Image 1 (tube, rainbow, N blue to C red):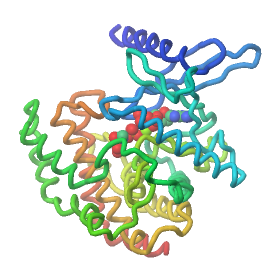
Image 2: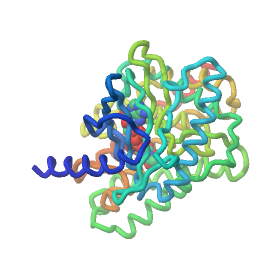
Image 3: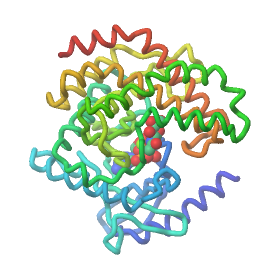
Length: 374
Ligand code: ADP
Ligand code: GN1
Ligand code: MG
């Protein structure tokens, strides 16, 4: 019953937002959509005269995570317009190969209601989107799509981008945040995570690895996606080819290793991000290789030798950072990521740390795979 009431309230809020967008037709259906951890995503179906049905995505942006939705949408519009031009120039389909923002009736890229800030995208139909890869080819295709995304944005004017989340992949800062949450122990959970805490603290050096290289000016800063989770890329359902990179909220200056690493973390694990049976969690080296092959191909030779050799480290640091973020959120009483049960963030942190440990075991193998692709 509580669920039904919640759904009714959601639907009402969605309707209030939807009527301010440049949609046409009669709203026939509202469904919660996808498995994102941050925004509230809905699929809306409209009946348009005698033309049949049109579906659109409507999202309530998470204002706790993104305190400046206007700046965020400026980024999204700038990046998608730039991509659209490139895709058209390359003979591609700009309605399927990038997100398309549907504006509000007042011409803005977002709508503000009592319930928050909303935006809308054309729905990219006939696609598949996976939380976990089904086969190695999916990872090749995801890698190709994310690599291509980075290549297409190579000459995007990075200074135009707002930093939507400050220090997003500053792992050193993430470690400091974790230590602060541990000290504050807001809801008395610190005692329950001593093993995980020790795991984090034993790897302080990893937290500083990229940040210190960046501070020394040793790595090229590129426009990167920064949230290359497998379910942030759509594959064409018919051909199963990498089609459209979505969830552009964190597209900002960053490192190639971030985009490589986060996709390996999410796509090359043998288990779900919240698997409780840790014996099922490991790095699938075949998936790792396929993702790397696709990513390098997609980047089209733009990565330096140094960057390529740092890809395995990117996978480890991104996995470590993500585990630390889940654990920090657990200590802070689950204020950032959406959770479905009280220990959800802790389960997620544990899988990430198990994956880090496995990557440490497989380090030489990972390096050999990357060397073999050069
Ligand atoms: P979050 O930031 O919460 O992860 P996303 O923007 O990734 O939100 O959207 C959540 C999910 O909704 C995606 O994983 C995908 O399944 C689906 N989705 C989002 N936008 C589109 C779109 N334009 N077309 C088709 N599916 C989409
Ligand atoms: C979030 O939004 P989503 O679900 O695609 C998070 C990522 C994490 C990921 C872990 C803006 O991604 O950074 O790696 O969860 N996005 C943001 O699953 O914090
Ligand atoms: Mg997402």
